[in-house]
Length: 333
Image (cartoon, rainbow, N blue to C red):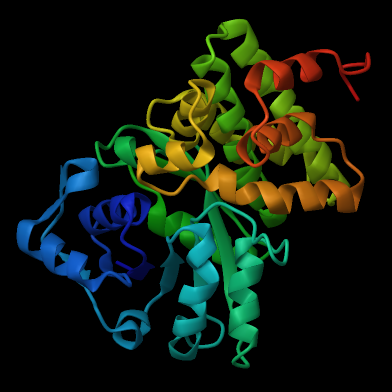
C-alpha cells in the first residue's frame, strides 16, 4: 500500500482517487473548493461521473496535512491552475518528493511544460522534486467503470517512473514507462488542439475521410514539433501520442472534440466553453503551441487553422479551403 495525495477534485482527479482507493492505497484528495469535499464525503458519490466513491478516500481541506508523509503527490488541476496550486503547496512538500502531473497543457506565458512549472515553483522555495508525467488514452468516464485502459508513466528519473507504474497499475489499468517526459507532455497538449479540429470537421458536416485526414496530419504536426524539440519519434507513435490523439479526437467523452463540434455548428469559442461547462484544454494550449512553432521554425497548419477559428473568428469553410489549397508537398514533409 502506498500513500497518495491528489491535488484537485475534478473528473480525472476523482477517477484516479476512486481507482487508487479501490486497489488499497491510502488516498487523500484536496481542492480549492473545499465545500465539494464535504459533499463527496457525505454522499459517497461523484455526480459528474455518476459514480460511487469508496469509503476509504480521505478528504483533506488543509494543504499542509494533505501533502504530509505521502509517497507521491498528484497534480490533477486544470493546466492554467497548476502554478497557483504548486505555489501554495511547495512550502509543504519535502525535497526529493515524487510529484506526478496528470494535467495536460503548456503554460502560455512561459512555454513551460507542466512538470517544468512544478519544478520551477519548488525551486522558488529552495527544493528539488522528482517529476513524472502520467498521460495516455484514459477518459475518466471509462476508468470509473473499470474498463481496460493503458497509460504512460514518463520521467527522466527511471526509478520514479517505475514506482508510479507500480502504484497505478492494476487489473484494469496497464501502465508503461517512458523516459521521454517532454515528448509525452507535448503530446498531451497538442492532441487536444487536433481534437478540436476533428470536432469542427464533424460539426460542419464533413465525413470520416475528413476526420481521418485531420487526425493523421495532426499527428504529423505533433511529431514534427516534437522532433525539433529533441523528443523521440516513437513517443508520438505510442500511447501518449497516437493513442491519446485517437481517443480525444473521436470520443463522445472528449470536451475538446465537443468544443470543436459546437464551433463547427456555428458557436463562438466562448459560447462553446459555456455550453460544455468545463475546461477545454485545447483552447488553453493554442498560444504556447503556436509560440513553440515559431521558436523552432515548424509549420503547424492545422493548429493555425484552429487558432484562426477560435481566436480570430474566421469562418470554417474559408479556413478549410485555405488548408486544402496549401502548396503541394510530399507526405513526409
